[in-house]
Length: 382
Image (cartoon, rainbow, N blue to C red):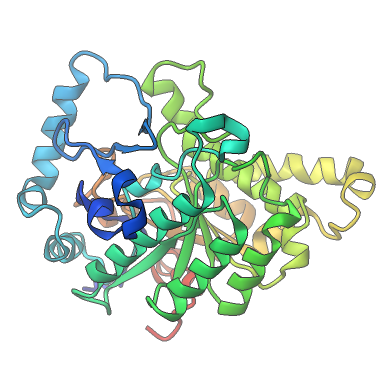
């Protein structure tokens, strides 16, 4: 599928799960509580779970719904007509010029967006139910990827509501389902930040299996912190913050909280949150480490930016021109590319073409489209 002489790997392509996925795939003991995908309009991403609609995004502004529908019909008419089935996914990859893609969910980005009952009360998500939701999605994704397993690679959903269950599902995802990564939402469960030692067994298992842990936010859920800054009531404002702030939070927690000192072989993907913020953030974080690090986090032996350079990967958007400043600061060896298909703000089917116009050298383009992707997902040799 080489496009203009370049092979292209998508670090973060999305599927559009069927509304009845969990009703068909969840363990029978949870069948009466299975999440239900909503179908209020074309390509509705919302899901009902445990009495909540996730994400809880407010109604669109007058005129925006019609504009969104126009965009969706223009870009995704054929895929919608086929129910976003596996064949339509491959057709979309061919049209965009993608050789291989790691697949992430749409509804599944939100379905675990409730905290445990110990925090939220009876409206919470019990750990065993959360784990069952993740297993159901992963079983469905295995069947989806089976249509073209050499081109569609799975990223498994794990529920952080119980770390032992998360470890078990991570192992199953890799050893039985053949997935290349796991993913988590940036928001915290049970008020535990990601550097809490509670999660160490999960990071250890990812290290042992040789897979990355990726973080991918999106929408407004009930996990805290709320990276969309809940007082903002307009999409133009809260959506600007949500995904970048989420992966910034994760980066600080892992790099300054000792996780990457304890697990030096852990690879981390910070997806769909832009890259242009990284020079400022890590400049400031390094300053704070030099100021108080020896007293608060003596186990963090290097500047946080050094852990970031060695262990973390950021996804650059197809038209993210500030990537030039990122590369000037950090180099080009920990950036990956994504199309964000089939979401409304994706540049599909011109994502690769838009990326090729960014102010990057040809060598950098090749690394971002191929080499770095292969290192992140451990698929060198493709």
